[in-house]
Length: 304
Image (cartoon, rainbow, N blue to C red; front, side):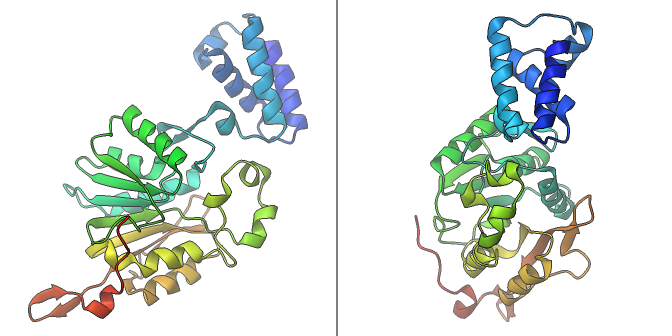
C-alpha cells in the first residue's frame, strides 16, 4: 500500500493537485475500505487485483482534475458525512459560515421552521436540524436527482422525520408565510465568469448551481421578490454571497423591505471575506397589532 500511495501521489501531483499525498491516501481508503488506522498499522499490506484496479481508476480521475469528494461521492460538512451526486453542489467549508450565522441567531429553546432554497445535498438544512433540537424544515430544489440525495442524507442522519423535500422553482410551491427562517446558497457567479472558475468547480459542480445570470444576482432578485409569501412576520433570511457582492445584495434586501442590523447583517468567513448576509422581514404596525398591507405582500407565488 505504501508503494501504491507514493506512486499515486506522484501521478496526482503531475495533474496539478496541491495535496497529492493526502489525496492519494484518501482515495486508497475509499477504494479499499481500509481505515487510516489500518494503513498506519500495516502499510506494507498488498492490494488485491480488484483493489489495485479500483485505486488506479480513482487516481486517474484525480490526476485529470476530478475533486476527491466527487470521486468518492461524499463530503464532510460541519463534522457530518454527506453523500453527493452529480446534480448537487459540493458543499465547501466557506458555507459553514452561513450555518454559524444562523445558529448564533437562534435563542435557546427555539425550534424554527426552515426553508432551504436550492437544497442540493441537504448539507445546510440537515446541519441546522441536527444542531437545533425540534427544528423542522423543507428543502426545495429543481433537480429530482438532487432531492433523492438529500432524502438519503436525511435518513442517514436520523432526520427524516423533521425534514421534507419538494421539487420546485425556488419557493413557487408555497403560497403562504409559514417559515421562520429562509436559507439559501443560490447560484451567484456571473455567467461570463464561469469559464474562469477553478477546474474542480467549473467542470464538476452543476452549472445550475453556479450561474447567477449576467451580474450574478438573478437568484437573489427572484427570491426577494416573493419573500413576503413564505416568510413569517419578523422572520429572517440568510444568504451566502460571493466575496464582492455584499453591498449589492444588501441593497436588494433593503429594497425588498428587509431590515439589516448594522452590527450583524454581514458575516465573514475564516479568510476574512464577506460570505453571508442576513435580514429580518419587517411588518407594519397598526392599531390592531402587527399586519402587512396588500401592497407590502405583493403577488403571492402560485401553488406548485
